[in-house]
Length: 199
Image (cartoon, rainbow, N blue to C red; front, side, top):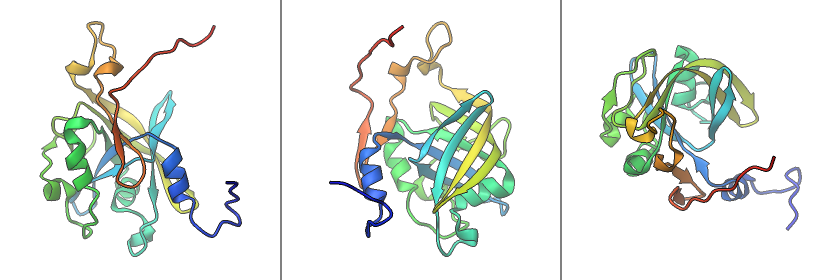
């Protein structure tokens, strides 16, 4: 099959999300100007920079919402703050539950029975018990076609001691992250292997 997005009648969404796999899931918490806490998963998520430390998630258009933005992207843009919680195995089902479409102002924390934990440097709460969470201040938003890229500079991090070696470094083998595939498909990061980079 050869694909030309300019002439293809069908969306490239299924092709892209079915082949760009697995994708880590950033579970993004925000607090809106009205004080309502929002929590939503984003598999269009990655590290954008390490100096300064910047994380990025991409939010698709939400027709019918103000500015056609998701609540998460709008809250981040209006308040300048959000928290990225890294989804691991114990939180997979709760994460999925927070992807439900709710009325604006309805908290996914409450809908899914997810406990809040206070953040240190920003107002939005993080997910209680999560092993890795990064408090962010808005660095920039960039509109790219049907999506809005939201970039946040990490201003404070929370890491479980269970993820760390005796030297205080992250032991990636202890990070039981959940990966997003396509449709209803997800994966565990249990099967791992190593290769040394060439000199």
